[in-house]
Length: 247
Picture 1 (cartoon, one colour):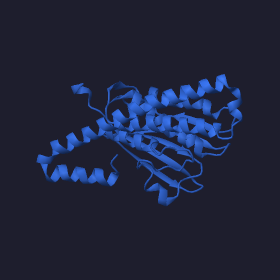
Picture 2 (picture 1 turned 60 degrees about the horizontal axis):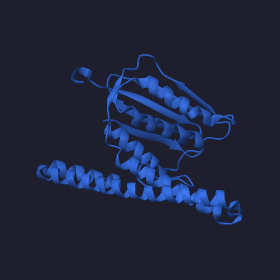
Picture 3 (picture 1 turned 60 degrees about the vertical axis):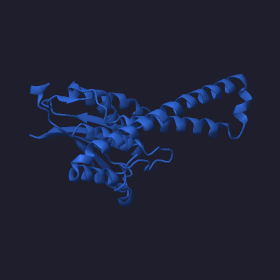
Picture 4 (picture 1 turned 90 degrees about the horizontal axis):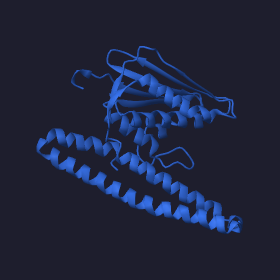
């Protein structure tokens, strides 16, 4: 997976040496195919391992008393999550676009995450003007973006904290803000937060926000974050308005 710095250099090479563009795109396609094949093979093995662990536990319940059994199951789940996120990262630029009601999609994201507040005093709210225009976008990929950001925000706030989802539109773009009053992010981590394998979570894979960034940019948009320790964070997804005349 290429870092932002390498991606910028590749983009510069394409601009400076147009003859290299096809070769660089072929190399990128080869890299994505390699990662996709590796993810597929590893996922198959891990699925078998997980099934074996479940069978062992059901057949020999006493295994749960083994002091490393819980860690073994946790490691297997972690690897499955990592492989899943690697696959999402690799396929992040492959879009199946259609006409999307963004207000409806954001409400679906909100409702999908609302159960995460059950048993807590956390507040999750969604407000949006009714005049948000439709987008030509991949609804499944955008749903993944918003659910990922909302879940991250809910995990960052205290038991009585809040997460607010808002949407606004200007003549060029539609902006979706996910704001929280949680723990915030230190400046040294903030500059690297969208890079692969960088995470502030104890058991995180470090690919979630990289996948989010990749999907947003594949739609021609961009994502930014404003944060400070103990003051919360605001993630803003900006998506360009579409011209439907050619669709």
